Length: 341
Image (cartoon, rainbow, N blue to C red; front, side, top):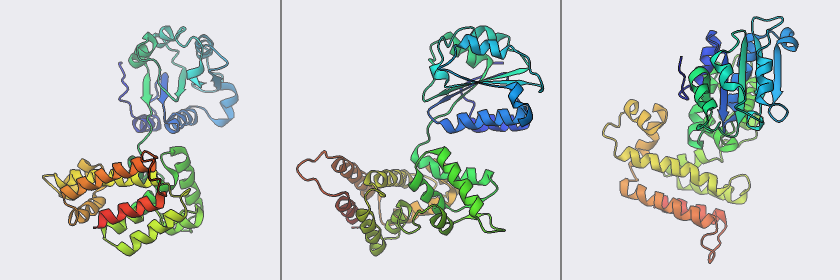
C-alpha cells in the first residue's frame, strides 16, 4: 500500500502503541527527538530486553553499506517474533541505494528495518526514496518553531498524565528553546520532584528545580505590556539589561514578533469568539483573551507600527546601525516605551 510523508511522528507513535507495525521505516529530518522516540518505541514494542542481544542489530552508517544492512535484515529472529535492524546515521551510509529498492518490494516479514537519517532528508529525486514512499512508512521530523513549543509542551505534559499552565509552558520555552529532547528531560525531572499527590507543573516548581525565574521572562514581560503595567515592564527590562547573557534581546524580539503578528491577525478576524479565533491564531483558546486585551489599546495601525519597530530594533541589535551601537538593554527599554505610549 502506498505511503506518503504525511505520516506525522505522533500518528506513527500511536500506530506502534496499537500494534500496527510496518516492515520498513524511514525516519528523517532535522528534529532528532522523534527519530529517536519512534526507534525506541519500536524496539520496546517488539523485543523483550532479555532478547535484544539476539534479535536487535544496531548498525552505523559510517561503518556499513546498505548492502550490509539488507543482508542483516534478511536474517531470521532467534528468540522473538521479529528481528529489529536499526541503521543509525543513515546519512553517512555508503551506497545508500544498494539493494534497497529490491528489498522494499519483498521485505522479510519477520524483520522490522528502521533507517535513521538525521540532520536532513534522503534525496527525494532518487528511486530509492520513491520506493520508500511506496512501500515503507516515511516520517519527516521537522524542527518546531519557537512559537509552536508552548502548545507542544502542553500536549507532551498531558500525555505524561500531568498538567501545566500557560505561564509555565512559556517559561520552559523561553529557557530551553526548541530542543525537544532537552524539554522532555526537564519535564521528567519536574515529575520526579513533584510533591506526593500532585500532578501540576507550576512556576514555583520550575523555579525551584530548573532555576528559571518565574518573575523575569518573556511571558511576564508581554503580560506586563498587555496589562499596561509600566512599572512591571520596566522592572523586567532592567533585569534583562543587567543579565544580557541570560536574556538575549533577539529571543525577546522573536517572542514579541510572534505575539504582535498574531495581534494583527486578531484585529481582522471576523469572528473573535475564542473557540473560532484560537485555531486561526494557532494558540490555545484560553490565550485569545490576551489578544483581546491588547487590542483594546493597540489598534491595527499601532500594531503595525510595533511590528515595524521590532524589525528596526532587530536590525540595530545586529549592528546594522554602526553609527550608534547601543546596549541591548537600552534598545529594549526604548521599544517598551514605544509600545506603551
